[in-house]
Amino acid sequence: MRAFSECPASPSTMRSSGATTLLPTSLVTLRATTLSTMERLRNGCRFRLGPRETLASKGLPITVRRRLDPVIQLDQVTKVFTSSSHSGVKAVDEVSFTVGEAETLCIIGTSGSGKTTCMKMINRLLEPTSGDIQVGGESISSLDPILLRRRIGYVIQKGGLLPHLTVAKNIGLLCKLEGWTSNRIQERVSQLLELVNMPAKDYAHRYPSELSGGQQQRVGVARALALDPNYILMDEPFGALDPITREGLHEEFLRLKQEVGKTIVMVTHDLQEAFKLGDRIALMDCGKLVQIGTESDFHQNPANQFVKNFVKNHESNDQAKVQRAVIPGACPDQDEPLQVDEPLAKAARVFLQQDVSEWPVVDEEGRRIGKVTKESVLRHLC
Image 1 (cartoon, rainbow, N blue to C red):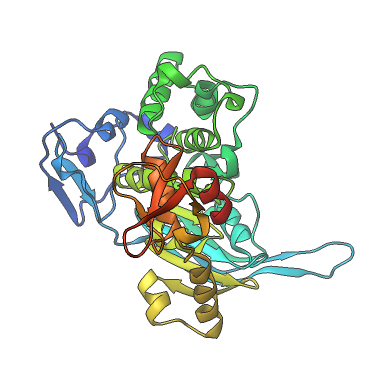
Image 2: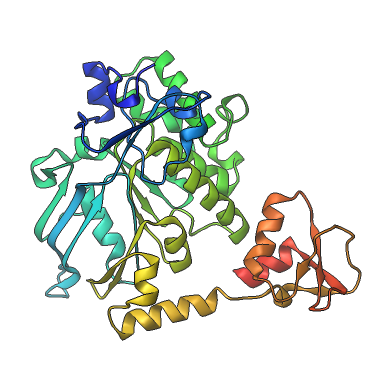
């Protein structure tokens, strides 16, 4: 069995997926022991995995392509909105950054900072006033916007699913527009639903209204992957979900990004989410890029006082303890109770992992003092 970088792709598959030829630079082939979902999803296309790959224990030779060259570049990009009542509002002001292959860049900032405007210019939902944006080495100004968007997956809040279409038809919509056969679409939909842990036999026939918020978001991610794009844009994909559901989707996202190795630009309002999911974080304010770097950079080398305050304010909001959500009195009998001084986020993970409605809490001396419920935890996290 050959490594994925050597898998043949038919011309039609190459056009549909937006796949490009891989250069044989910095490739590492790993030997594994069981069949992976990635192999089933390839459909003749080539996957590029990030540097923190953990699939070496799985079944086939897997080619890992390490991040070297930028594949998304913004160069002095500015966006000015004009109207009859205003001479011009500069939403994005000479922003420059790059995103490497298989890297996840999270863009965060204050309300109105320009983060969403910045992202929407990458797939030409908005046109820059000046500057240049390149995707895959090509200036997007020279590309057909529709064809460009089919090369770039797009995920928004609540999945953005069409309510009158089933899950299967939502996921397969772009494949149908590309002229795929019904059998090929059905196979692809089944593969993608398996990838996001929603078996086709249980979910393909359902409508969006029959899904939970977390399930809708999973379907939105599956649809974004339908044509196997090299790039994914995500506009606050987890922002509308409750904290417990969001925590679960964070874990699925981290697994998924290792398996499919896409280049991802994500907009979020949650700094802790950005630190957890992003390889690097770009902080914007008033249309300017203030700092870009890793979590360590933001803690150890903040660019200015605004960055210091931004990090401090977000950290103070993230330090709620279990004590806040305790309901005194009768205590459930489960083992491994929570302690009052533990992070409330740990309580959220308990309800995510256990099929229970309440969990015991102990004080500093190990005495059971009460319980937390899913509702009490959500009330203090939201």
